Amino acid sequence: MIQMKMPIVEMDGDEMTRVLWTMLKETLILPYVDLKTEYYDLGLKNRNDTDDQVTIDAANANARLGVGVKCATITPNAQRMTEYNLKKMWKSPNATLRAILDGTVFRKPILAPGISPYIPSWKKSITIARHAYGDIYKSVEAKVPAGSKAELVVTAPDGTETRSLIQDYKTSGITMGMHNLDASIESFAHTCFRFALDTKEDLWFGAKDTISKTYDHRFKDIFADLYESEYRALFERAGISYYYMLIDDAVSRVVRSEGGFVWACKNYDGDVMSDMVATAFGSLGMMSSVLVSPSGAYEYEAAHGTVTRHYYKHLKGEETSTNCVATLWAWTGAMRKRGELDGTPELMDFADRLEAAALRTIGEGFMTGDLASLSKLPDVTKVSTEGFLREIAKRLD
Ligand code: NAP
Ligand code: MG
Image 1 (cartoon, rainbow, N blue to C red):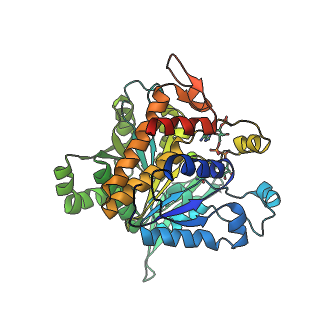
Image 2 (cartoon, helix red, strand yellow):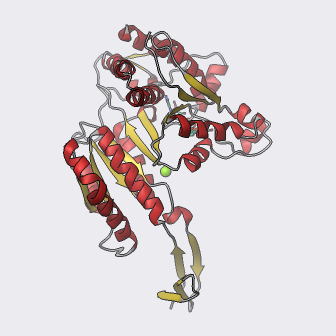
Image 3 (tube, rainbow, N blue to C red):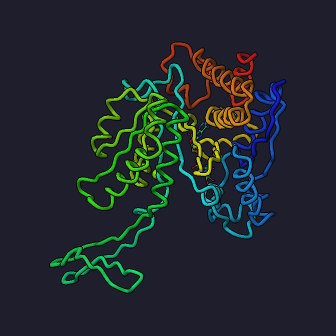
């Protein structure tokens, strides 16, 4: 039995991923690790019963203990209000966690043998680091009738106004105002630099400073200043590099690359590019995700949702074939980080072996339906949700 020093914050969730959560722990973790967790039930029923206090408690525990692992959860909509008889349309738990931990989300596809990316040169995965504050996601917009004038007005604390003309509209049109904050960009840059050091991968950052000479240029400068003042020496020691490039240049280099780096993206670029990268690498069931807070807390999860369609089949007693890989990577990520922080290499080693066993299972042709339909292997056996976990356990032993 592998011993742990400090607990991991365990956040349980909903539907098929909640079913998977228990099966995965029982089959692949509890027989090997004397698991210490601080458990929070973020299932929708308990969020409703506790007026969502449980999510806040879990986020604070994650900040206090440093490492958390989260199951996918339902973000309520109108249909869920009736399905779960909710008091309120509770906020997305991920939004609550992000608000309390104040972090950047890193999404990385998991590569498995026989599942090839659509882009043949990609040999290693590409991690997208998406800035999650501001820009067009917090903008004001207006339709402008012909004959109007739009101006950008900044009012200083002493009341003085600086005006710049956006457009004198001879014909009708549209306009938009957006913003960002130095502090948010700085914390985004810090988390990206630290993440690259952690994973020992190069960091790329692309923006459009040639066109946006003030706005995007500010992003470029903040990254460059922090790199020179705090990170250059650490990067050189780790044998990795930081590259700034124009966003269009970044896109073309990404496609021609072998992968194996962290790609920091402004909010909108990250939204668009993470879907491109995830799709180009294969299945939603293979996308891992970690929220890294500037204070050094980590929250690991799968990027996918609660897989509702499979859950309804499961409730009817039908066999499901739900891929546990991204959820497994959430657990191995959390155990590896816990091991690193506590100085328990056995736990880190177990996380490595567990991942290797899962990849070998897929490489030997045993996989869930989502992967079976993508696999290039000659002999593929599509297995059930439980069957896949059992095949991984066999190889782990
Ligand atoms: P989803 O749960 O990600 O599933 C969408 C579809 O993708 C599934 O129906 C399935 O396709 C495929 N899929 C996703 N994960 C898979 C896996 N592990 N194995 C096999 N196939 C997988 O998205 P959704 O159905 O839009 O959302 C369901 C619920 O999840 C919603 O209530 C939403 O609020 C919540 N959600 C939570 C999070 C989170 O907690 N981070 C993120 C996103 C969504 P097939 O049906 O074709 O097999
Ligand atoms: Mg999107």
